[in-house]
Length: 422
Image 1 (tube, rainbow, N blue to C red):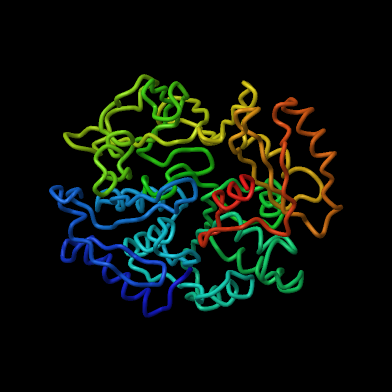
Image 2 (cartoon, rainbow, N blue to C red):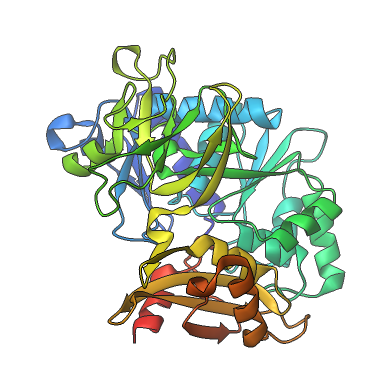
């Protein structure tokens, strides 16, 4: 959750000192504390030279990891972001500093010489958002904002979740959104209807793709930031998913690795063209040891079109979103996309659990949209069957008022998978 102004001031001073080299690496906690992490910059202790911040992953898909972000990586991320969105200025802080999106807002603000304005601690609502916007500096300065899709949905779509106050107040929240020169949306897929609502409202949104290991978003609207290249890597030693092509991101904002996890760091990070077969990640970027490009091998699948410098990237899902049911491979992301287009569906999640008969069982959870016709499960089955084939039709369903969320606004995958397994 967002922090108090006093906590934010303390965090900004600590990160600025680390970036200047006058203070130790820092880690921000969910409750607003600033932890000193000198060991994170000590290779002998499992850290990496140049580390200025430690970010723990959300744990939405597995065991949390401690990602080591360097001075050079954060600086490159801030500069490339400012170049892409057209300026730097004051940011509104809507997510916690313990997430990479919040830390990136703080890093960009330090680079711009500004102080971000935090939302008041507590649930995210249109009212808390509009009140925070009112506290931002007046005038013609550049304004920017970073949100997850759930937050944008609550501001744009009536009854999109707890805290919505109705169309009258939602209008003022939309007016507040229009004051921003750039609104970054990342962390999950933005449903089509929310994207359409944003376009109708004339909002300047950028759909971002990235992760803690790349200092946050490094691909905006499908186009890598300056200095970033992407390729597909098919690694015969790819852990639990050998032979599945995965996206690899290369550039100066790639992290140094994971704290005290040498094996996992070796599996996902490197410099140069990489350890596995695949399209070249590009060259000529002075971003790693000896001038070699640093790269991070993701757990995502997708497509990459065009040469370095003119690439377009599309994320199609995660390698663990590929469900093998009865010998047929099904994309959970594609099933989710079909569900999100149907009447009565506000949000959807698709996953899999073990099944003695099918190997894996396709499962779907749907949050109903109270402003649209009731969700029709039979119609949903038929739509999925027609578009993706019979194997893609979920064998187990949950119809909920709302999907469970993690504190950062992402769907709590583990909670839903546990419900399907019991």
